[in-house]
Image 1 (cartoon, rainbow, N blue to C red):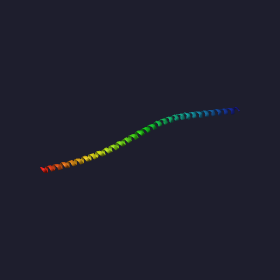
Image 2: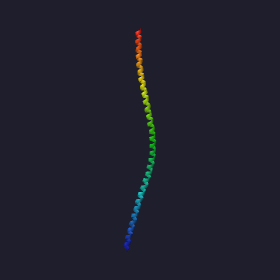
Image 3: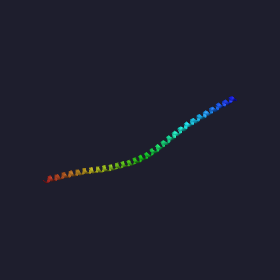
Image 4: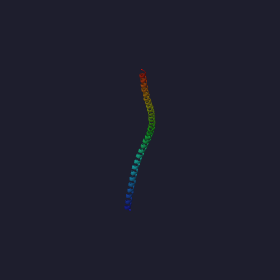
Length: 111
């Protein structure tokens, strides 16, 4: 009977040791969970901040693209008007030269 008691005591000691090992492993996993939950919370805060910044940058970018498009339109209109002025100036110059030449010919003919 003493032998059975000793065997039972050994089983009990081994069972207690195994339970203790399981608890230690559980605590290690629990520490890892807590650490990852902290990391997750930090990432979520960072993501929130970055999402807000992205929204502000997108709004700013949209305003600047609109402004650039307005500049492009104004430049295009101005260049077009300037080209018309140049064409008109060239036409005026040709007319002036022709008229000057005609007046010179008339003056020479009357002399």
